Image (tube, rainbow, N blue to C red; front, side, top):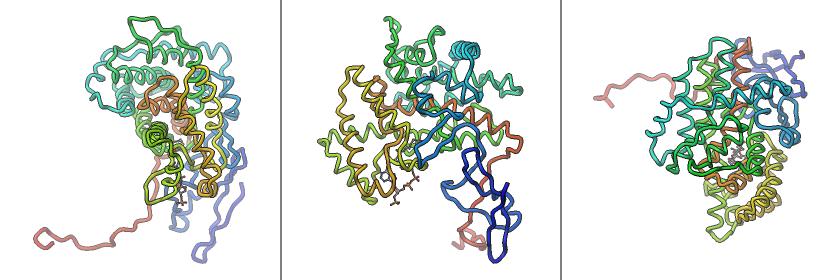
Length: 424
Ligand code: CMC
């Protein structure tokens, strides 16, 4: 381990330097405050390493994304989502026997406690499915005790992975007033989800392979993305030793925001608005460049990717294929392509290194799959679940782990005397 030197008010401090397996360099400031009284300042944590992690590697300059060392391009084309869940949560790819056992466990834990069905009756018909998802996942903890042993924890992980897909599908059925469709244990994770979403009790439903492949791809591409807002939330909440269910419920809430997972819904709403406005995408480009408009091009920009988002590249190709295979012609795809082409040549976007992100094309595929707009972010959550779980598990098994508790620079009033009501 090497050291770096910080010169602060004429005093020199030695700070250790940590280097990751891919050569990322970090200055360890853990002891800086104790030595000097100073803290580091980094609003929005844009340049702060909050932990060391062995789960996902991103090189934002080169557009690299790897899960446990495996390039996303290989994982996305060769793996099933269940396999990716196993890889992220347990650290290695499963052999065939391990995979079969894992798939079987996932299938056997998809049922919700019958009493939980009553919860759905209490939600307003206007409830956003992300609000239902976060509260239902929190509510799962009321049925299953916090894990005391590794075995209990593993069971809760399986329960969470399995039951979240049922909760997501039930929230959709509730929103369209159809009866819930119970899970089928003979189907794969993705097939079963599509079955619970689209089967109608009076009819037989065969999961179209094109939908299954598209869902697999979408879930895999969302499965982890290191210390993003929702994952950091899961780690933050979990660091207080809150339960797995409570921590993931908090992560779902963080994901719902339009600057994070909620962007996929906003992208489609934006494209639809442009279409209704006569397809004048240049007008919206100009608005996005004008700060006073308060408008941002949704699905563009990323804190980490400064060249291209490899997930967006894969999804752009997939959008063409899926729409063709389903025989869907979506005018929003043309608007999206035009927006992208124009932005990539525009100085504002080029200078700021703003490229389409994962949310830009995913919504077009979800639409072609007949998934309603309000469910898009729920699908993101379902995909991100193994990543959140892997991070929660990694954080909790870290022997040096401590409760997350950032500092601040106070800029409010200095001390002053309290003034009673009659003197104000
Ligand atoms: N449209 C127009 N201008 C933008 C956009 C955009 N989508 N994104 C960033 N900018 C500008 C921003 O105004 C700023 O300009 P200036 O330097 O002149 O002040 C500059 O680019 C840097 O932006 P920032 O807000 O400091 O960047 P950030 O790293 O804090 O935010 C972001 C990243 C993703 C929140 C942001 O790019 C954004 O709001 N994008 C739209 C929402 C979106 O698509 N979110 C999904 C992110 S990917 C999925 C996920 O992981 O959640």
